[in-house]
Amino acid sequence: YNRYVDPTAVRQPQGDSNRQVMPPPPPPPPTALPAPVLQNNQSNNTDSSTNKLEESGGAKHIDPKLIEMITSEIMELNLTTTWTDIAGLTDAKRSITEIVVWPMQRPDIFTGLRRPPKGLLLFGPPGTGKTLIGKCIASQSKATFFCVSSSSLTSKWHGESEKLVRALFAVARSRQPAVIFIDEVDSLLQERSENEDESTRRIKTEFLVQIDGASTQGEERLLLIGATNRPQELDSAARRRFVKRIYIPLPDLSARQAIISNLLKDQKHTLVDSDMEHICTLADGFSGADMHSLCHDAALGPIRDIHDIELLSSEEVRGISVEDFLKSLKAIRPSVSESDLKQYEDWNKTYGSM
Ligand code: ADP
Image (cartoon, rainbow, N blue to C red):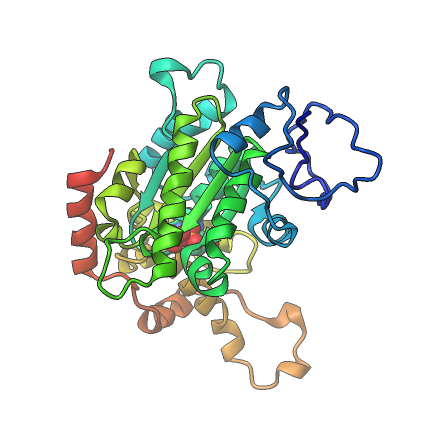
């Protein structure tokens, strides 16, 4: 008879409240140890996630090493990110909630015409909150979050990458609802180039196969999020698979104010609202990550005045002032250029969903 062995059952991290409850597996044969291997010829017909795994070709022998690596390094459980942690981006947050979060929460309502897309692309300048959004989607949908960067797939796991991609989707399927977040997805799914080597090509093919497997399995609660700072490098095959493409722009003035006031809320400082507004106006063009760097630098201002740090009591450290910020604004510059911004806006007009 067919039997399924849960690939992640062996190494169960603490506090795993998102773990999907599986139907109890049939008893193992007397000599078998619970091996972290999915076996093609052993599947329990009552276990729908196993059947899906097999249909997608993901149930071939999976190296336990890879499964362990995925559960310990790529998988994150019990995320607590909320939309309020992400400043600005009101329209993007609203659409994302409607397009993917609600369907993951209520798959029974979002069927047929309302069925959600399986692929979501978040594109825009670096440091604007794409990864935060990925985490927030997973946390709000109570989904297991798998976060992997393309560069680590192609460099660190070179040689094993193709297998890793297959294992990643297999583990994600066994832990639905799940969100797979691929950072720098452009380097994985870029336009084919002259110097593309054989292994890169194979990873890319495997990836497309897995995405297609995910999109044909209507009832699966698996969302693939690609994030990129270089959307123009994605080829058309990749673009097509990310049905929804959402622009994550630089924070506007009020979002920059929200970031700064949030970062200062637990700090000793002397800034009033009008100072924050002034600083944020001067910080036009800063990304969310740039705003963080600015605040970190300004927070060191009071320390820079001190001659002997060893003799100082912590209460004596003066509050961060508007002058500290003005000095830091000379040192910290926006990381995104005007010409880059224009490219994102153009790409958004042509391919964006909002
Ligand atoms: P991206 O994935 O777009 O490159 P991240 O989501 O990794 O950017 O953001 C980098 C850091 O910048 C975050 O950890 C956060 O500290 C800060 N940040 C970026 N955008 C925002 C935002 N909209 N609101 C609050 N913090 C932000």
